[in-house]
Image 1 (cartoon, rainbow, N blue to C red):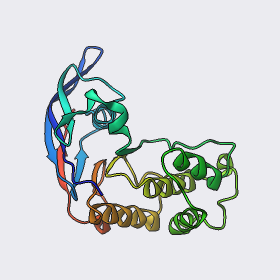
Image 2 (tube, helix red, strand yellow):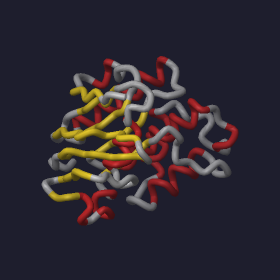
Image 3 (tube, rainbow, N blue to C red):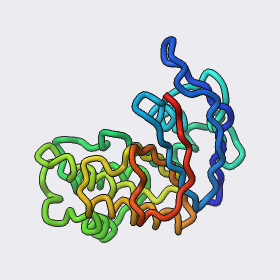
Image 4 (tube, one colour):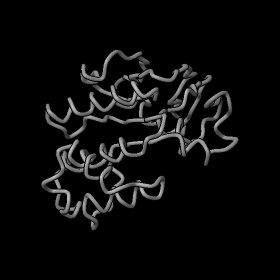
Length: 208
């Protein structure tokens, strides 16, 4: 896993006439987790989308390994996984097919790896069903399997425990702990603290 550091310097972002991000700065080293908290409308999702290059700040910059990510967004994107509110799944493919194509375009994926990941998230018995027939929690579990399979150093997670039961929340905590143990880094926007299984995390609180 990479030893690169994520550095965020003085981010300012407006949406229309609303100043959403107001000078956000932090440094996240390999093996560390940062919880981004704050009330609704405080800019948690906007921050994650800015970090991964989906939104452009009016001021400030994001650095990965000491380099401004805007210099080569494609290279930066190969190092990260972004999991937003809606899992990135195709409704008319099965859970297994989704992972096969989603992960397969990023890296070689063996059938054994796929089976292991599906079993890890509890999807073994329903992984052949079309995604449009799955519950919101099941879709989230498929997305979590994909997150683990991507094997990238940086995870950007927006409310990763959404739609999950207690066992599913523990699963999220365990996956985060494994990512950190591998030397990866995690930024998670949350309304509530991450599950204790995730281990200690820093905190960045955004104001509305």
